[in-house]
Structure formats: C-alpha cells, structure tokens
Length: 285
Image (cartoon, rainbow, N blue to C red; front, side, top):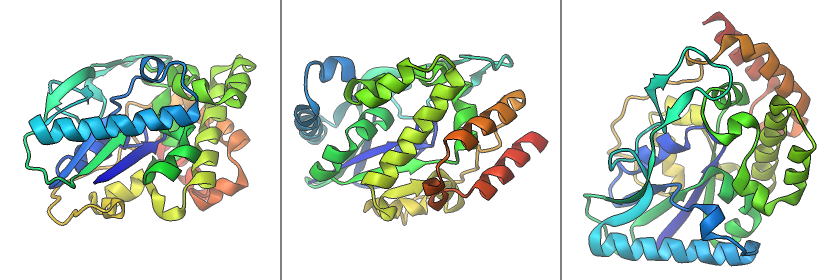
C-alpha cells in the first residue's frame, strides 16, 4: 500500500496537482477530505497522526470496494482550481471570489490495484503536523513563488485572506500567539508565509519539495518525483503567476511584506532576484 501525504502553501497549485494525479493510472488523490476541527477535536499531535492514518486506510478500503471516497469536489469532480474564473470580481480588496467546492463522497471511475497510490492533500493541517507526519508516511509539499501566492491570498474568500490558518493554529501555539498579537492582516500573511517555508525547509528534503513553476514548465512530468508513472499524462498547462485577476495596486505592499519576512534561508527555494523579476512582470503585465 502507498499512502502519501501532500501538503503545500494555500494557492500554490496543490489542487492542480490533485487533478493531475487523478489522471494517472492506479492513483487517487483526495482534496482536503479531513475537517480538522471536528475530526481531530481534543486530540494531541500524535493521536491526530494516528487518526489521519486510519482515515487513509478506511479511504483505501472504500475505494477498493466501491470506488467511493470523501473529498472536496465540484459536481463530483476534483477540479484543477478550487476557485472558478467566472466567480472572480473586479473589486479585489478583501474576499471577493466564491468557493463553490462541496465536501462529500464521490465516485472514481477507474481500475485500482490493491497497492494503488492514495494521496491525501491538506495544505495547512499537514504542514502543522509535519514533524510527526513525515515519520509516519511519505510527505511532499507544493510551493510557489510568494509574490503570486500572497496576491492570490488577497483575492479569495478564505480565512487566509485575513491572515488566519485555523487548522495550524490548533497545533502550533507559537504561531497562534504571533497571529493574535498582530492586528494588520498583511503582516499576518507575512508571518504565515514565513511559517510555511520554515516548516518545509526544516522537515522535508529537497526531493520532497516541488515548485508550482516546475509543474507548469514540465507539463506535470515533475510529479514522477512522487513515485507515480507520468508517461501517459497528456496536458497543456499555463502559468497563472501573472494572473490578470490579481490586484496590481497591492503588488508593492505585498512585496514589502515579503522582504520583511523572507529569510535568507529561503533563497534556496526562490532567490530575491527572481521574486523582483516576478514582481516587475506582474506590474507590467
């Protein structure tokens, strides 16, 4: 059996990766099926890991028996983006896109062997439990340049747009205290960005971190790093790093936050020179 945890920064392409994985033979990728506040209520970190593993195993049984599993979905399908283009508004300040994802059981119409690859994706919960999770099962993270990520955070109706990530705050008191002591939502977003990058550099090796930009440039072939056969994956992917829906008036403010919280250690992921290039390309696009 291959159970694999998939995490990453919100709006970094984790939903796209789930969509691509579900196009590969003998692979199922579930999109944030675990509702942390109810499913893990009252549990400590190790107990939470044990219950997450139980969820993996019960999902495997259900998929093998009936091809059914619980996941977030849109009309019975895991899409390539949790936000639809049609639901983007011109008013970008604060929450302005509508999340139309549902949570429930759906059917996967594909053959599966007993040892099929089961991925479960959760950006925030799995990052918060990363030290224990990596000891339990293989874990990978999807990252994306923080300029595009923070601009995206400011255009979605998620708590991240207000600088909060509640599942992580359940398990990381230091993060919770830092966010509670900061009144500015942009500063909170900087704290959260820093928290994600620190966790990935501290708890994952280089081969376990995959960049959104690599997913796009290789047309998904970089996902072979996850131990799946991508040879039949036939897709055409285009980068959304310069998304025209991003609020250009926020670019300078966002970049100031990144400069404040972007540690020199993060240069191994994205150099500041590269981030300046992305910033300038967004402004001029």
